[in-house]
Length: 103
Image (spheres, rainbow, N blue to C red):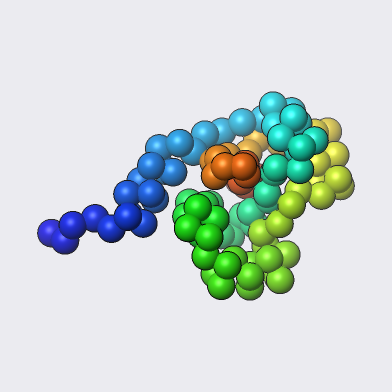
């Protein structure tokens, strides 16, 4: 088996640090402009690795398509009112969030 790369190690670390949180718990981070919304069709860990490794060329198309970007006031309000649960992972100084999909 090949030795794990730094990206593999980072991916495993971020995966272990991923947690569910209620949007209400994330309000302080939103107030500081530190929350980043990740579209539900993207792999949250892959996006987190791209942030951590500063892969601008990988992030740009997602940003341009509106699939990765700062949480908007409208999103925040809707998530607050609905009590939305989110998958979260921290890539300092950002908190990446992705709505938990209903089963």
